[in-house]
Image (cartoon, rainbow, N blue to C red; front, top):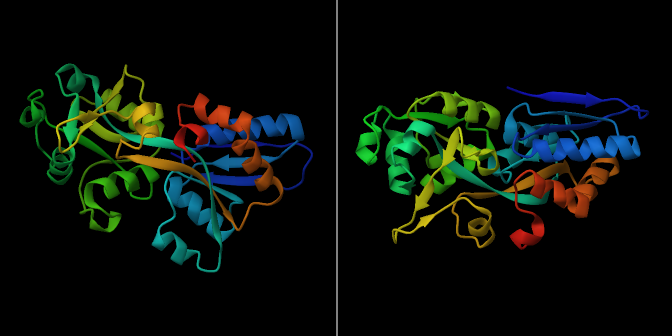
Length: 272
């Protein structure tokens, strides 16, 4: 579900921002600060997730697109006359999350092959992976979402190689967390910053050596966790005007503190 808020101050034309629900909390708080301190007008929504944000920046219906994935070839082809400029403001991990009943039954990690098997075969039971005798319910992120793109690239190499599936689809992070928490036997892809360890639980990823790698700040900073992604602002060319004001704020000390406050890795910790 798209979420929108607008603030009206003295300026006639609001800064239009659209896209990722992962990036949204950081940008919204930054815009609220700039509205109070500098009189910046803005309108922000999460329609279409990352793909919607990139598309809006490319078509001119938004001044800034929020994305938690790099623009791909399709994104650039649809904005062929536009210079899609990306500004990285932080890093995030995509977690595979499960409902409390699955976690409490002892499922704490899965391998990539386990995930591929679950993804391609609806109707499997957790007992096949050492868990409860309960059907696996996979809530799949919509394909335009940055979370899904990172997941598909990790499992299949490219999003184009991901097979069509019949899992129920979910959109925004809040919807994912709510549905997984309320559904027995559930699993989905979710930004690690939305994992609370009470209603939904993040699984570790078992690598080929048998080591389990968790979606935590240390693994992300050291480049060990495989489902990592940038948090990006997308503009038509280098940002100017109010878009530059927002970008410069988020790259500065106060903006980077907001990135960390919302559970993401700042540029310094990420080595960027």
